[in-house]
Image 1 (cartoon, rainbow, N blue to C red):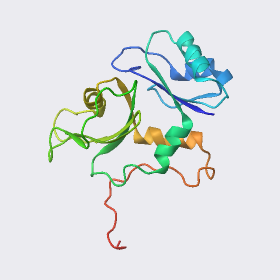
Image 2 (image 1 turned 45 degrees about the vertical axis):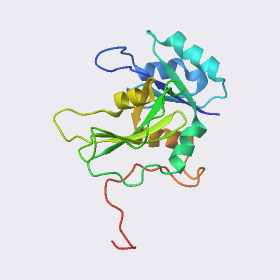
Image 3 (image 1 turned 135 degrees about the horizontal axis):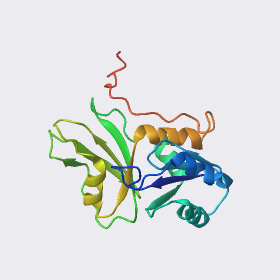
Image 4 (image 1 turned 180 degrees about the horizontal axis):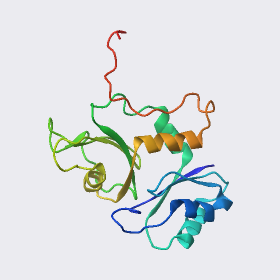
Length: 194
């Protein structure tokens, strides 16, 4: 089984800085691939979650929350195409909750309220929370703090393009039936028109 590894709050604002590519090399025995600077990895080796977690903690130069998810769960999210088209100028995100949610907010949740929302929490599927955000003012309302407040637990968030990249590494082309996609910001044609 492949694992998706997400490190929470690393390489942000000068705190908990490290080289993800160096960590991936240090974890070569687990066939770890690095995806960018935010602490996102895929481990392809047959290994228990507990052993993988210990190995990561032993190699990081600081303490942080390490979220490890079965790759199959991420592939399942990609297969259902949870976003469809999103509003123009919006960016789709996936938040992964650190622990079981203590709150169950009514969804969708808009911050601020409609129609001037900048962050919208669309759905929750177990520990996975789907949201979109858009910039309407000088400051950006990022979805991660909105998700954390709404669900009452910590979370880490990745852009949907990163989730699609994870899916491409978890399921080589052709093995999943169809490739994951990044949600379009273009409206879908109605009634078969162009």
